[in-house]
Image: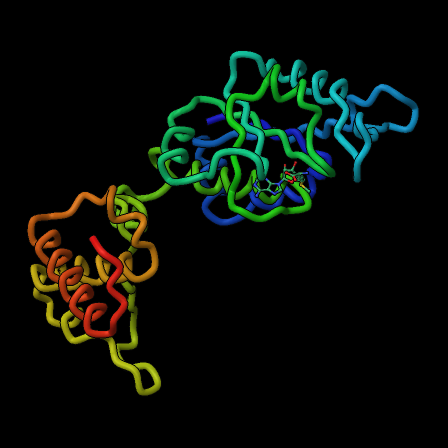
Length: 253
Ligand code: SAM
């Protein structure tokens, strides 16, 4: 996959491509990247890329001309252009898989109050928010999206690691343990030391279900559950209803 990033702060991005799993993906030729400092496309002698908003209001807006020239310089038309912004659609694993299927992605890192709307209208395919909060700049949001996307490309990470991860089937992951079996006064659950694969799988399924129910019950409606897990889920829901009834919290349904 080719990744192009338009940024005013390339030094925030460069280290990511030179570290850890991304560095290996770049070395193997699975990912290639270029970072374009769009200040270099500024029109005036002061290299200005932002101006006050029409209609008044706080902050500055990124001007259309430098961004447009930068986008044309990388032939962005016809490529998938992503603008991370708090007013975009919420990013999730499904979107990560969708972007991972692209040959090439172009990211625009916003700043200040964001981009002139005409750049969004003209070039942007996906406006993506990484969460309901506001960051100072688009570089960190861009890296979050790239990180979630590139690890799904064939050859970056072992396939079985991806299959059991959180969100892979709308369930969160089970708890993980490694050696030593006893750490301080805390022990690894016996089942994981038993060598009994069927029991380990059942325990992990139960943990995934319990954790998802507790932390992210909203995910369960899309979860693909085995018949055993479905029975377990119904049982837990019934137990919870009974408990709520006993505590006077019953709300219907
Ligand atoms: N005025 C904008 C608003 O209220 O929606 C906020 C602009 S923010 C200070 C500057 C830049 O950071 C944005 O243009 C965007 O690129 C990035 N950014 C901030 N929060 C983000 C989020 N939750 N998701 C994705 N990008 C974000």
